[in-house]
Amino acid sequence: MAFLQWLSSVSQTKLDPLRARILNDPYYRLRSLMEVELAASLGIQIDANQATVDDWLRLPGISIHQARVLVQLTESGVQFHSLEDVAAALGLPSDRLRPLQPILRFCYYDAESLYAVRPINPNTATIEMLIQIPAIDDFLARAMVNHRNSNGPYRNLADLQQRLYLPGQLMSELMHYLKL
Image (cartoon, rainbow, N blue to C red; front, side, top):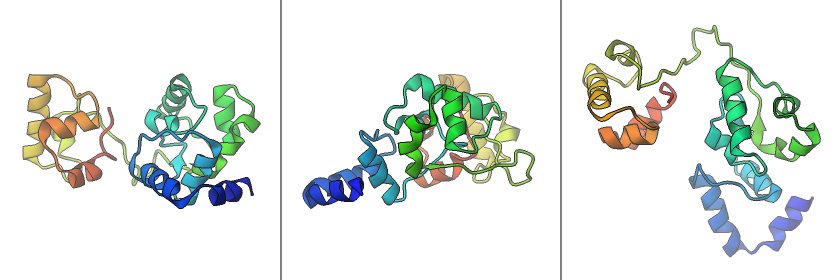
């Protein structure tokens, strides 16, 4: 009910830019629990088992240290099944995280499934490994390795995209297969 009251009290001219920012800026850090509810109403969801540090940092009250801990745990194979699991991992009472519930999703991923994507690091991958990824042909795989060898490791996926002049559509396809 508080969300509806807040929504009706905010003028449409103030709300439209906020909606646009929440929808279009993946690094926008939600500032209040009302913004969490607005983001959830716009369909924004964070999968706790695949969230990046940047995803966790979108949530109010989550520190960089906490975000890194959560990502390290999921990268090591820990799966969060509920809000209580996340709270336990951070050593916090569940009630402190409960307001974040509308935006969090808890999906199960079978690591042994044939369909599970196992992202590879483009800073350590060989040409042979890279061409196994859909949308990467021999030319692109060689370019990735040669550019990495001559100009140093990629800092992040945006750096890889900029250095190789990759179109956004291609990066959208690749980002699920690459992890730095």
